[in-house]
Length: 299
Image 1 (tube, rainbow, N blue to C red):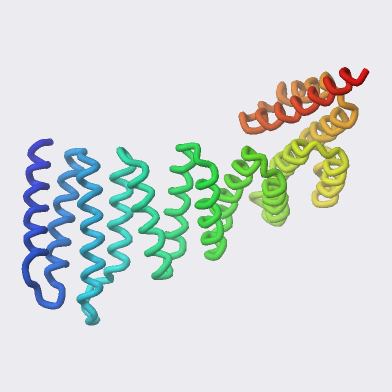
Image 2: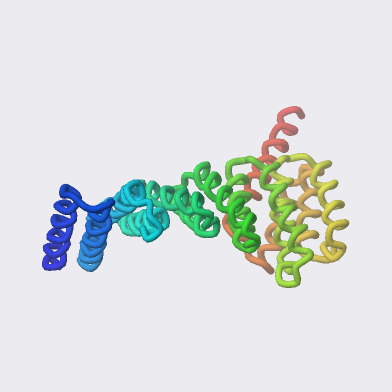
């Protein structure tokens, strides 16, 4: 490992020397870039991820300067190469420095967008969203998943766009932004009905939308929503998901905590509820308990 680091340092030193020298029409940046790339590979072999990331950033800057100096037809496609170098830097930093990783992936995404590689730009926006998700920074995760969804949608990569949108809906609900989450889940359900591969997921999207409706605590709204969902998909009323939402809406209307709990338990015994659904349903249950206690206080 130390041998690879020594080699990397030597390549890096040679690259810096090239940059301080003179080159014809920016050729020194190309020569230095080759040496920086060799240095980065050595650091990666040594698992010295910060050093690898630092050198990839220098490589990206080399390509950027080469673009400034080289304007002939034979010059490298430096903006594309610069974007790739920033992505490589990000993936090196990913193992040690999340903040630096995000900064480099953002640079890569912006450069790919500039040259019209929108799917690549979307891919890195999605990756940044995942990193913010891991950090539990839901606001920033939403922002980058939203960028990724728009870019994927523009390239008609519908499945990837919907994956990002579902993340946005999930986090919006966690942040109590229920109308936004409902709109997204309902939109995805509508789109999925026309796709033979996706239509079987419709009842799951409508269940998620319905749970968000329950969190608003508006019985009229959830009743109206269930009617809309039946119109949207006539088969929905025969599903366990519909029955659960209808039972929970009734329990909410009657302010019956026991009925609410029993309905959730019955569904969970057949289809295990995930953590997200459990968290939101607990919010509704606490809302019901608060109303029950308020009624007790009044009597």
